[in-house]
Image 1 (cartoon, rainbow, N blue to C red):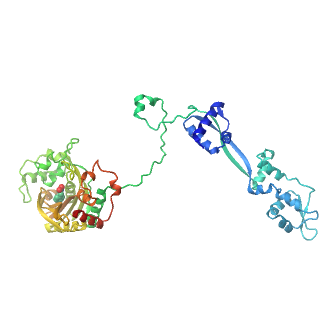
Image 2 (image 1 turned 120 degrees about the vertical axis):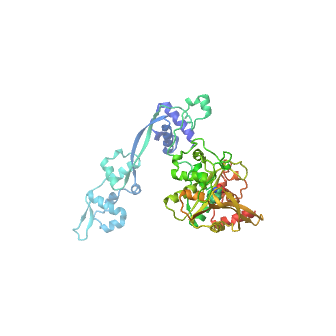
Image 3 (image 1 turned 60 degrees about the vertical axis):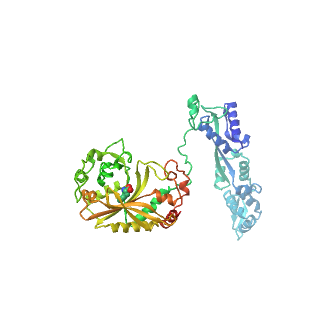
Length: 509
Ligand code: PHE
């Protein structure tokens, strides 16, 4: 049925008589199920167009068993009629009447219409009265006709107990006009629009209430970004090699931990705003936050050296170390960890991190101002460059990049330093895949790491291998505001072996 038309009809009926006496009658007249009308009433009530008052209804109806007696009479009358003048055995009576015989005999006995006579030897059922009236049948017929008012409460209760009638109750409604009554429902606005504000029409609008219980649409599924999938694979490689993950949760770092702790001189070009994003608010981390004795040793080493070094020979400025920046490498995290390791009492350790870093770079198809670094650090007594090469070989083997070459390089904090190259069969050339080195004593000794402890470390980007793996040739399609959301669901997920195979293929492509 057209509920809109029904609603119009309902509102007109309420308007015509000032009220609707009974929604049940309205439903019957309109030839619709009462529940349909109840649905309309509920929504009209919610928008305060109507008021309602319950009308309670109650009636008895016949059970299936009782329906069966309508044509043949109540079982007790059936029993009475079946008893001949000279009586009948109970067995014969039951044979004749079936199930009705049982109940009927019990009832007829109670009514004292019949009795058992044992005087003739075999017990017989005998009539005790001349004639009987089928009052039960009369009541059942009245109930069937909806006229049970002719029966007493006690009679109805008895039949209910005999499961011949059942009680049924329901509600209909008396409907009156509500404060927002109208002949047509005004569609409630679901949101405030710019137009309503401009024209002032919001004043006349009725707004739909928020349904805070609505469950909302279930998302079809969540997806990890390819960078996170590849990060997971690198994590696995590291953890399988026994590395612990470093806490990388602070993007904002002081120059002290990002540069000075790493023996990177304060005049170094990387410490220029052209290369590094410095914070304006808060612009500095007060030097009181740095361990005072350690800062003093860092200053001393920068200025005059020590541990076999002559230092840089410049005047180290606290203010320069206090400057806040967006960390330019995860080696800032490594420097904090190594300092902490020295304070806690040195033990050999293997650390890794994979997280975001920031550099003030010209953006192009392979460079962004932020990217992810993967960093591995191993600290132990007596480590050598061979250990570094061995660890790198194992690490890159697991990545599927087994053919490695190393090229001398320079980092302010490592000596020696090596760039890592991997050979691509397909391209027929060596591709740079990372940077590495042995941390300088000028960095480690001021931290308090014991004499004889060496630290080897390496770093690489997460974006490059991910781009190779997912066939993305512009970094802006991988990361940043231009990324298409459909990229994540479609990016495959796989284990390290599958990833290694694809990396090799990618390098060949
Ligand atoms: N921090 C270096 C970079 O940003 C990577 C690196 C880490 C080099 C550890 C040597 C040792 O490129």
